[in-house]
Image (cartoon, rainbow, N blue to C red; front, side, top):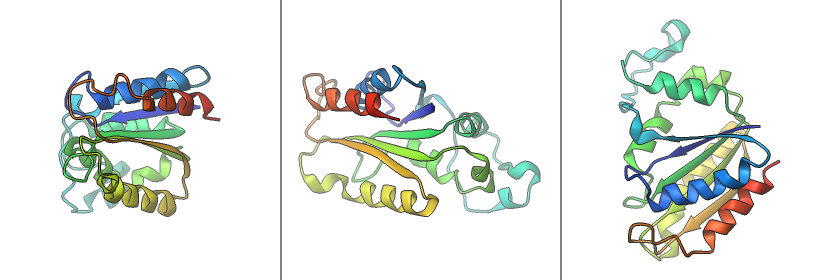
Length: 178
């Protein structure tokens, strides 16, 4: 299986990156895994013009690097979303990518399943609720299989996830992917 992990943290070596790496280390034992830091790509926000529905090849009129992300997504069987939680949502960089999937081009993707990896500074259980609801709606709309979720609260400081059991859980989740 080809697994694409999209990480949404703008900070290199972040708690999100560490959680995604743990998952990737487990999954790479049996699958091809590519991790993409979306912050490394210049992707504009979707403006909802729907011109991609009528343009040749369903290409967006915006001249940015989303075409590179589309190519990676077209090759993936599974997509993993890894993000810090910013004000009860995923990072803006990752949200741009997800919003730009409002294109007929997505019908050509092979993606059949998703997993969710989230890191939050807050320890409140409700900090993940809005993201989980959106994730579940996406699963339902596209009939994707949910391969699992790792939600880590209370990790405020840089690399404070290092001693947390959720890193092992992420590794084991990656290892268990079939």
